[in-house]
Image (cartoon, rainbow, N blue to C red):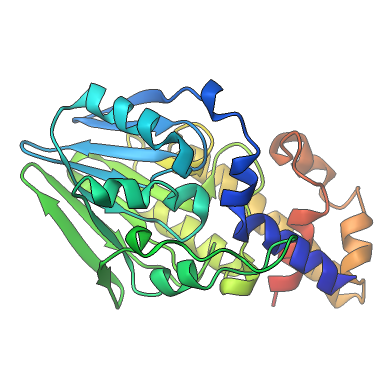
Length: 297
């Protein structure tokens, strides 16, 4: 049961583009939130996008699902007619990298941590068969190794930080220090339990450490763009981090007491108080506890 549950959870992560094909993208609207300092969050289909407008170009963080590229690009053009020079990926999942190829064809350089292209080329199996590799044109070509790098255009500097494996082993946190904005990718979510891609190296301890990094680099005025959910702030990430730690501690205790993964997943009382805030409609209840159980030390 544990193996099947793991595959089911991973499949949802690995075949995001396949799930996207079943959605009606004609009804998607790209909603813009002004973050100040010529920076914006754009929410449409897939993960949140961050847009930083410089004096002669634009930096974009994450590209949502491929079918909404035209809508996303139109939203960005509505903010600035300047060209998108760099696209930064916070991790490899298709709901954050789907528009990569189209942005690259339009002239953008794709930037990511060094492990990301290989994972895009070798996705995990989905429920209908093997995962579909990303097209060559969607793969980032400017890669960084070690802990950090910087991407700069006139008027904007983005500091990219690779944390210890958290959501995946391809994660990047993006800090726009001058604007006091942080883009977290799926290390932070503001509206629901997060996914944890255990098979690609993610884990609950890494998620907590990633949230700690964001908290340590934020102040009361920081605008934080999570992977999913509304723009949040330091207090919001502190509450999210507390949820992660509480879930980890309770599930670790149950695991140490000999409970199986199936038993933990079936125990609706274990996280009942957290479910009231963090269990989003449609989010399968056993999934988050299973991923925590599998990754807890």
